[in-house]
Amino acid sequence: MTDDRVSPRWVHWRETVNLEEYHLRWQRMEQQGTASHGEADFIEGYQPDGVLDAGCGMGRVAIELHHRGVDVEGTDLDADLLAYARADAPQIPWHHADLTDMQLSRRFGLIAMPGNVMIFCRVDHRRPIVATLAAHLASDGLLVAGFSLDQGDDALTLAEYDEFCLAAGLCLVERYATWERAPYEGGNYAVSVHAIDG
Ligand SMILES: C[S@@+](CC[C@H](N)C(=O)[O-])C[C@H]1O[C@@H](n2cnc3c(N)ncnc32)[C@H](O)[C@@H]1O
Image (cartoon, rainbow, N blue to C red; front, side, top):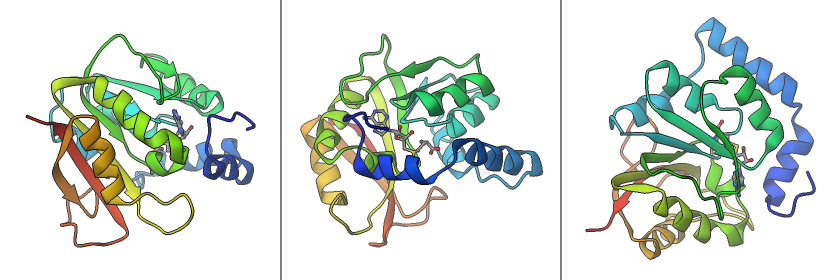
């Protein structure tokens, strides 16, 4: 991908991964019952009134939520991955949009970014992305993001992420080390839940 809206990390991932094989691997895990659905379990637990899977990729999490009866939509910048999502679940509304300036016509009870989406976004896009997502939340909505806290030039710290959220009017309500709700004790992965402040 040469699109300058995507991060070097995403360009590298795309260069090293064969999409057809990646998709087949997930399909096989689904068929064999070995696919993990920790993210969907976590999201469904809030019984949200409408979910947006932001940076949905091939729709892994959104499709699982749809199977459970959750009203879900997905959005991603990468048309190639979205094509798999559309083919697998044409009944779900999929949006081809940049999270930085996306404008959807509805608000959601929960917006989720599973699968390290925040660190696959351009460093300079992370703050505006959080602001855009906050603008798509219902008044009692939640923003949920799980990402690695690994080191490197494009790392994102929890302090930075919390500051982006605060600037967008969101405060931290819960933080875990895993999607299974293990307590967060300073490890290198965190799942954060933010809500509209006040
Ligand atoms: C590692 S993938 C995760 C996909 C999916 N959430 C999952 O868990 O399977 C990161 C996704 O973020 C998307 N992404 C990165 N920057 C984006 C942006 N600015 N707007 C929309 N999507 C973006 C990529 O296209 C990619 O699909």
